[in-house]
Image (tube, rainbow, N blue to C red):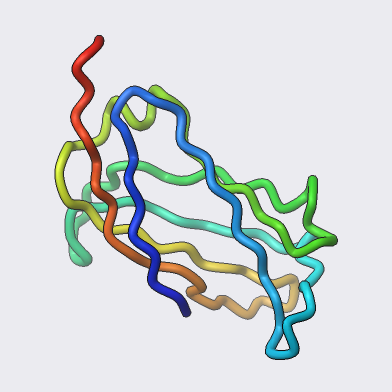
Length: 111
């Protein structure tokens, strides 16, 4: 698992890509797999700030997954420090947390 802190601007669309590779630095075909991830205020918080959308289909054979939030989703998020993680669900049922970090959610001025 890797740690990567991100900034999400309230009211703006958010999108990033990640590339999955094996221990030999060879890309992993993830086109048949699924991914899930959420943003929350704290690890134990029951309040979900946002749920990422994932697209491994477009470039999944190259190990590339796009994860995103709409401007509506980011507008609804609290500003300040939040937490997120991403899990990879392989077709065989194995779940691996592949990424986590702090979200710096910056407040929107223009509404």
